Length: 434
Image (cartoon, rainbow, N blue to C red; front, side, top):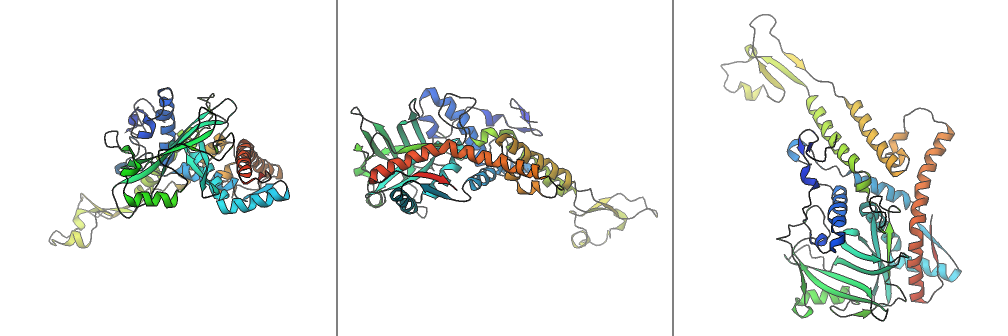
């Protein structure tokens, strides 16, 4: 049973997981009004999704991260995008959409953005320009801030992304902060800055402490020449430190993709609920059951009690050659005919453990409003004959979830396609999830 104000899970102190300690500069740069939302709510949900939870997981006692939420999120993500995407519209608009989606890798970006939305409740899809072409990119909520007006339109956005991927050398890493906004003339603008970082900006649970973190703004002239050359080659449309006009009319070229309609705890925020918040308790329970499973296997190994009378006391190497203490344990001898080796082996309760884990899977399916077989396909196998009504009901539940995800995000994606079509002066298409 989870205990939030002290010790829970068999004596494991999880109090530290619920403290207000902030180990990431991203959460410190949010306005004061939203710091509790980002630093406590979002950070906790993302840490729960990413894996290791300080104060709960402990390798020494067998509590290791199982990353169940990542598996569930990827399963739902694959279910939504299993048959790809298509478009509808005029012949010209359809041909344009097919061609641009292939060149810009739209399917991969949408799939990635939805997975980010599962993790953080909300993700950002941003249109970028390279030369004269547009291409989209997906960003998780712990790498951007947005202001959204009453109509749901993004009024300003600030995002952080890596500028250089140099994993083979160098201790210094450079990232780009891009700010998009409407200026005093109501023109869509963008301003970019280069930052020097000493740790990964996209990690969550393993971020540096405040004292060791560096997010220092760099002047273009002070950047090393290889860094400037890399940015010019790979990000040619970015002008560091200068305001530029965006090539979009009445838009910043950004949309939000959400996992749910809203957050019950914060119903007025234009964000979705992270899966780490929805399945918070189940994530702990699953890791705990995996620990119990390892204990069961350890206890069920074969062992034997051997009376000390059967050991050759005159052989100094007998213990090392014959009796491995992992399997044999010396016991006192009674020196009569009852002295014999006694085998000991506890019953492995695999069925009970499997049943409990299946209950966790079903709880996950109940909270996500999908069928249990969508979480774990084997849950619909070996349960005896089912009626046609039961099969249809199970499929309908998952189909309903898929439809709700499409209806939730399709208007935003269509808006993105409208922006792209107007940029290329083409007929406006609409997306279709097959």
